Image (tube, rainbow, N blue to C red; front, side, top):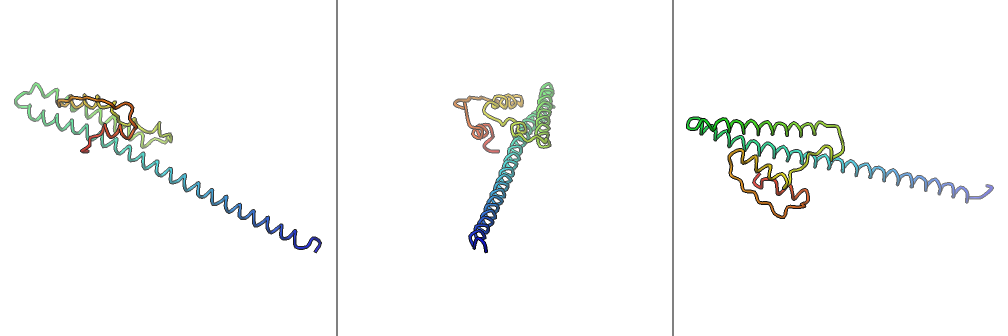
Length: 167
């Protein structure tokens, strides 16, 4: 042999090094792909839970108001029929509003957009409590709302403040 075992040994070392480097890069890419897939799955799950909570709020609050007003309408139909149109108007308004909000959320589910900010409805927060109180008053409930120290809250704490703790 002209150069002895040195060049052959160097060649095999370079081949083994390239193979080890390629294996490491392939493993790293596979790990990154798995991590991205898990992150995507977690985001999808969180989004589904978020939308499920939104639907629950819409249905629970709206049906609660509708049930109260329907009971009032049933109670006053014989004794105070002049109150019946108001009860029916609240039932109609609340049910239409709930249907509109539900259509909006279902549209989000059907949407192909990927940006969370575009897909997600604005989560309920203490800012929405006054609107919720107004809807409850429309149902004939007496509401006293006193909000202190709610600015600014993290999103999850704002959701907790807004949501019914019994729901």
